Length: 330
Image (tube, rainbow, N blue to C red; front, side, top):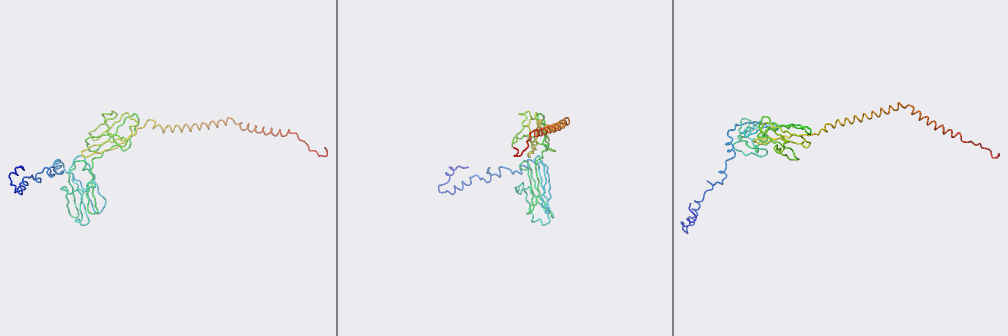
């Protein structure tokens, strides 16, 4: 390439047009080879994933939808590793299919039409399929096919396997040890993590720091958390979390730690009621027995009252009486 100085030396002062033409022809063409063009800097995600996961076998799932019922049809799909999926919706109509449009959504977001979509019509049945490779957690969720203006819907719920633990609270006592269990049937998580509740947050349990905890089965389809030397403050919420290539799944377990006095409280209350009842019965017996042993108490009281009455009458009788005489005798 010639420098601008060299060009000025070759071109006469009266030929500015020729200089401009030479500059245009020597300028690099960005359209043909500019490395900043996004078209040439990266491959489409779909092609890249097809190359990386080309050995995945195709997994097909079907849903049938009709215009007779307005009820949404759903199907659950459980995945724990990258998969090549084919989601297929079969729509059967009682009217002309030419007026029925098909759209696909991921959660509430409309999916753009790509090579992965294919729609065919046979008789009164409209078939729409969507093929894609799911390789990360962001792709998990609800995929829906919708037909017509009424948006008759079929939904595929794609999620990781569910973790199962104890549904009811686990009750134990201070000083004991207990074991919390979680399992994932027919699946193999990459690892398990245990958490303990701390207010509104979850705190990971580190067995290297706190020897109060022992974790077994960190890379199996089940895990156990052993808690030793329980205290009342050890009660609360615990979570086991399984990690898969396509996401995480967790289960909550409630632990209740009681002191030994707690189960005794009902018995102590019953014993106190029995003692009170026995005391009342004994007092009644003592009072009844005392009345039987002193039958003359009532008569003695009556005699005393009679004596008081007689004494009162005697005093009235001993008062001297005076006869009245006429004034003439005086």
